[in-house]
Length: 589
Image (cartoon, rainbow, N blue to C red; front, side, top):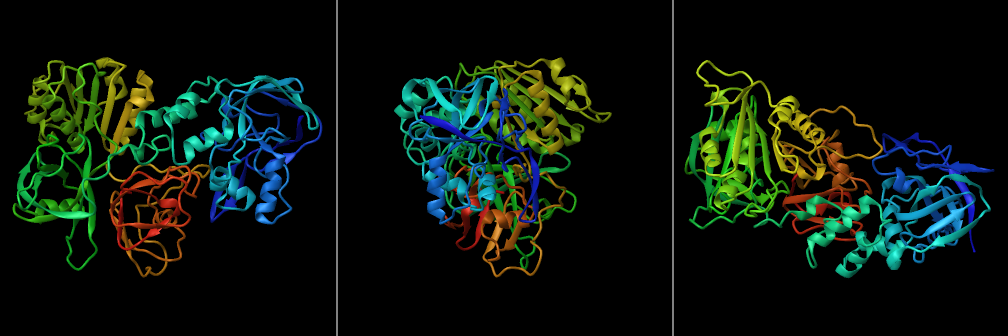
């Protein structure tokens, strides 16, 4: 007979951790007497990070007394007691390898349904005092699980736990946890798990991604979109020759790059970018810059558009210091911002949204759609200052004219006297939410956005408010992507920089999107810690090689792992939370 041994609650609080403050509800303590369990949590309880914890499908966390005995023995401790693993219900019985998703239980007046395993998160390690705890919970098959509240009611410690129904398909908590987080994702097991109606939407989406990924593919798209990018066509950098230079607007110059020996360069997915390694100062460190490809995929050459930025070391050098015939070090095309199935005549409408030099990746998408003879509805919405700043305008209009269902709308924020309304542009002002509403593009479109950060933020929100599903809105920003630091408030910081103190002995670590190259220092346990010390935006959750939120493309070089991740990342990628450089390294951060 299973029983509720301890009922634990705790409100979110601020906890010091590695010089930062974590807002977390992981500190739970047993309470006496009955407590009301409601739709979202137990009375007196709360979650600090509602993005990763809490909600209807994660209202109550359960952990087992037997697992406490296991960890006390594993760590040689005797201080782990109910509430230490952040659970609301400490139970005797209900082991993870027997409880199934969809099982239902009654405790006191309340009824519950099992929805998913525990979320892998660094905060359980912070609470227990074992940083690798998130990985250990998975590898030892003892994650614990969440309950949905079917009937609200009072519960108290000491009550019997009565099973009232069994979940269909008999998929245990330990089985489905391993199915997502450990290597090997057999299709029959995925299909079985996806037939369980009680499985939470988040886990359902992750397993559906693994089904779409297919058998034998490297990486785990159920955990990160970074694994969906194909591996790069070559490793590291190779010299390419500049074969043409052309001014596309007052401040944008295009450069065409080709193999020095005349070989055809590998193709790419429309929307992807390349990294250039430049040497404006031969005696100084290399300058790394990312540029989207703007020409037709499969054309055998690469074309980029470079906007000249004030005081920009990279763009200034490419505008003034590079000419036809020069050699430039280039890394292979990469990235997950890519047009899906350009040649599918039955595909959904395509909405391409850009501003300024953000036109470059969507221009490559236009080329791909034209080359495929696409009959899909294609909308192109673009913003520029005026005609002199409208790079690639004639090329874009010519391509739209070759698409039977192509439509374009161009906004000039400050049109010049020579700019012709209805010819050069179709609207005055900025591309905005109001303009979007007035144009009324199809709400079932797949949208691809590229431009300055403020533009991207505003238009992404506008498209979602307009009615596009979030998973149909794809974006690419210049520079580093937004960070993910769960439980830690975003702090104002300057541009990426060398870490405080004396320079490390090396090797050099380059952050391509942040434009920074600095020598590695052995004081940092991982590349994640090193990036944080440099104020390079990073994404993470478990910090111990489980969740893959930190998965990052390697532009050049290799790494060593400690500990080894539970499942390797996709080819060409690295988990920076448990890796250190094995020689000079460039990351797509």
